[in-house]
Image (tube, rainbow over all chains, first blue to last red; front, side, top):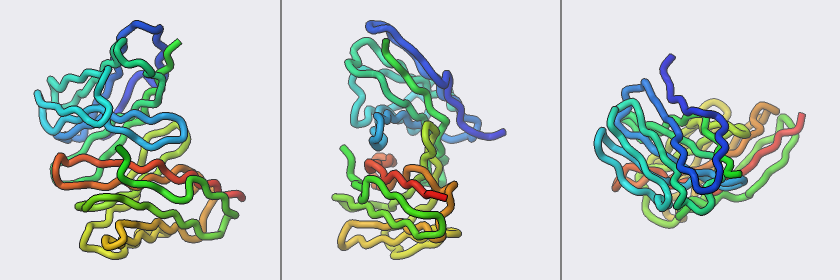
Length: 112
Length: 111
């Protein structure tokens, strides 16, 4: 099946720990995006990547880091510098010929 | 920053009624998109309307765009309980090739 997957679905982290969220797509899309969603709110862009080995900061990049070593994968690391990391994290990808984004099912991160 | 702002924030209707929600934005756009999100899930793309289009239809969905007023509306006709979800508008500007999402409208369709 073609699509975009995120793992894990639920993630718990102790304060002070870094944690990495996985995002994989087999749609052959060049562009990938990470968003954060707080309860009852819209999506805010954390980082995005238009092509392998390149990425740009979004609106709320502080406390987060990414890598894009493979076209299929765009992992997000939530570092201990992120003061309020509890949120729902969504990954998306986009093909070259469209402006439409395809979303994964999300990862809910809770800091204990 | 959130360019799109949806109105109302929440909407409760009976099955069979129409649901209308609005989106306003601040700067020039390339296109505007509407997405749907079921509770705890990812977003699903519904429809895209370009800046040179005024109205677009897809099944029971009707979207309008007024670039002079920087606003868009999404109409869901003959709503069903399965339409219960949050609906988000997202604006696309050519530079940066990224979307800016609004805060969403939560729609509850009662059977």
